[in-house]
Amino acid sequence: MRNVSTTRMNQHGTGNLVTAGAIATLAAVIGNVVVFYVAAFINGGPLTVPDPSGAGMMPAMVAAPIILTAVMIIGATLVFALIKRRSAQPVRLFLIVSLVVLVLSYLPFLLPIGLPVATAVAFGIMHIVAAAIAVPILILYG
Image (cartoon, rainbow, N blue to C red; front, side, top):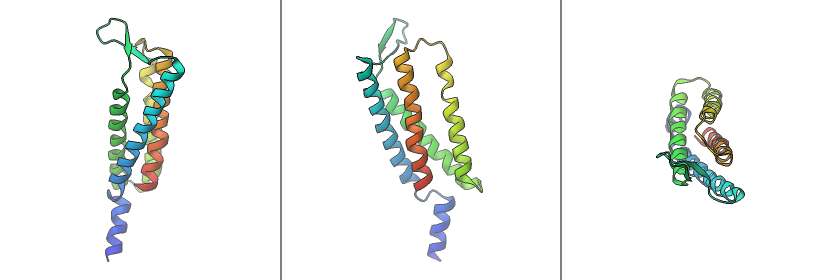
């Protein structure tokens, strides 16, 4: 009887999903920090973003990608948990949702906010890195 409830929990509950979400979050954050610093190295200096005060450009801080990546992967984990509870084909649906969200995440890059090319490319790569790391971890271990 115990095996039945364990199987049911892993199939439709949060079983290993909390652990998988934590690992996916940590791994995606590390991946994006690496991208941030490699991009700055290739750029020959810090990546820059528009200063909110309108006074030109300021160096991008690594804290922003860390926080945003963590928030987004935690959100993806919660979405996967919801999908697992309500869908007959949770992996397929999660892959579709993940791909749609990844594509939509590039829409802000189309806005004329004055983001330098090096920064825009680095941030764009970070989106792919986070998805490429987190989605398989969530699916395989969650």
